[in-house]
Amino acid sequence: MTMPSISVITPSFNQGVFIGRTLASVAQQSHPPLEHLVFDGGSTDATLAILRQSGPPVRWLSRPDGGQADAVNQGLRIAQGDLIGWINSDDVYYPEAFARVARLFADNPELDVVYGDADHIDRNDESFEAYPTACWDRDLLLHVCFICQPALFFRRRVLERVGLLQADLRYCMDYNYWLRLAAAGCRFAYLPEKLAGSRLYPTNKTLADRPAVHHEIAAMLKVTTGSVPLRWVVAYANNAAASRWDRQRQPCRFRGCFVRILVRSQWQWNHGPGLGSWLHLVRARRRQRRLSAVLATASP
Image 1 (cartoon, one colour):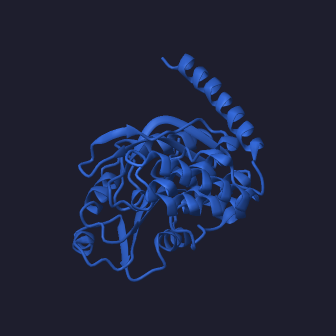
Image 2 (image 1 turned 120 degrees about the vertical axis):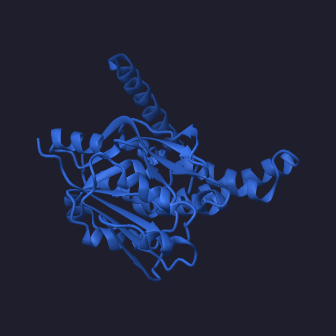
Image 3 (image 1 turned 90 degrees about the vertical axis):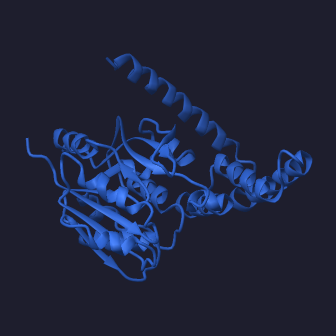
């Protein structure tokens, strides 16, 4: 059995504290990558010193870019591997991740995308919670981003159908890409094994400005699908209200602010209460419970 080759793309900017661990997690794979392409946005910390010490298969370039999505797109344009993985410069792959993914692709040539389980890890690489992954369900994906970005790999051939990342997105370019892959008819498979650690810490981009994250997700979904599932509207309202009022010390003001933002946002994005969105989510959740029960029964 011929194992497919893997190209790894890493966007980077001032992550000198972590990027060495990212590089090591790639280099230590038992199924080594064909290439590890690092596109750095002009870091001024220890990043360049670490990159200069790296050898093949790492290839890197440091210069100002248009942000994370632009950096990833630079890698997508030149990647030569059969499969592509994208890992940020503060995340890590777990041992044997590439071998497991490559084997599943080799055994199933019809597959376009494979994703697995992952952990949220802290600054010291310690896992503190599992990423909330789910079995593949296109309907559920509209309501919940259940795919952890570094735990997903796709065949290079899908670039011809889907193209590059949407470069103007700052927070949800990965979620947008998963939705586009699904809309293009790409075949997904869930691998119930932990493949990566996604780092979360207070100054992490995702945690530092949660209202902006959820606002971008909602706006992206409005453009992509024509409406915003109510779950995302509620998430935005909750985070926007929390950023204005301490829900513990001022619960009444928090609740009032939450309701005002929720109503205004729902009318802005969906022009109505959107109860059908809840029904789709409930049905998708029921499907997930049934799939989880089947997997649990099939496990040795």
